[in-house]
Length: 143
Image (cartoon, rainbow, N blue to C red; front, top):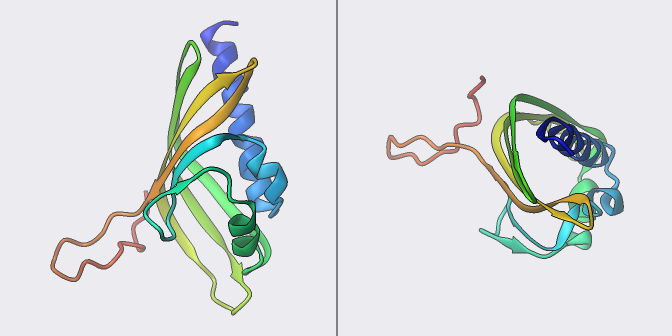
């Protein structure tokens, strides 16, 4: 496969993984992860290791309807059996408690090719925080 073909294959994986999350399909979303995936997500703890079907489904259950996702400034870097994808992602929707989140965060994904299939081996999502002493998450930023 050419680099262009690999990038298209990676983009398709990320798009379907994102759709699975938006539609709250835990098994489908987890199918795109390696068994030993390392995740630095927005929620505590500092690190998750391995697939967490129960945790993901429990989080999905806190949402009413689909989880909105919009990605901007997506860049795919592919080489051999390793790839990185970085982007800015907007998450929107309605929580079961009535809250309506609308925030942008930074996301970097590390993928590896296993048996000719791209899998997410590392996920890092973060928001900056204000360094003015308040240490509050900067959830009001937009690209």
